[in-house]
Length: 315
Image (cartoon, rainbow, N blue to C red; front, side, top):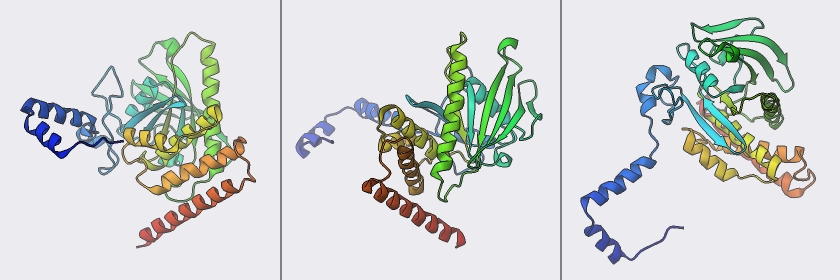
């Protein structure tokens, strides 16, 4: 709640303050502003000039390193949301995966649109000269239109005993504006959690105490990526606590990633999947009248937004 004050007190306080105090207040306000200076300086590394990226130091050992990506850390999972790499940024993309110990990638576009940092053909290798290589060792066609690529990421600069990691790339061509299937979204989360839990079990059997981060990317790395990450966090909240916080999670996401939830469709889509997930894990009863009403309302809102976007496209 915002506290009010009498006009006389406000006028007296403002007219008796020094210049230094005003400057201090302005500096504090500016510190809270989100900046995009890195995005502007690295124009050749961005896919789109109108899709900004908030400033963030991603590599503590090299503060000049830039990737169109932002981190989103929660008690329910650590994530990086990024755009698909360009031809000249595939090395940066693999470096980002390496320094954040990424073992699971959720790719919300087809392999052909993924940016070229891996080859969607078994036995093939993508190489960044004297830096990294990504070899596709196996391919699994799974349910709900999902394909999993098992890859080996190799760093040429890491010690030999620690130079190779297994990475699972979960590919699923997810619509940006159309209705997103809750079953498909849930299946993506199940694979993601399964690979992360497997990695945690293997890590506990070693001396490594490094945490892992899940990389989520589309093409621009904004709408469907932010929606998927928020949905995954809320679903994990339900699994662990039986509750979830929609507004708080979305507010935090908007602080971390530019252009997140700029369309109502993404907010509705996340809730639609969360409600369906709640049924799946028996948090609510499928026969409950309020549940059916909520799902019908959300579906109607999603279809309305979809038709509106289609009309704009047709125009």
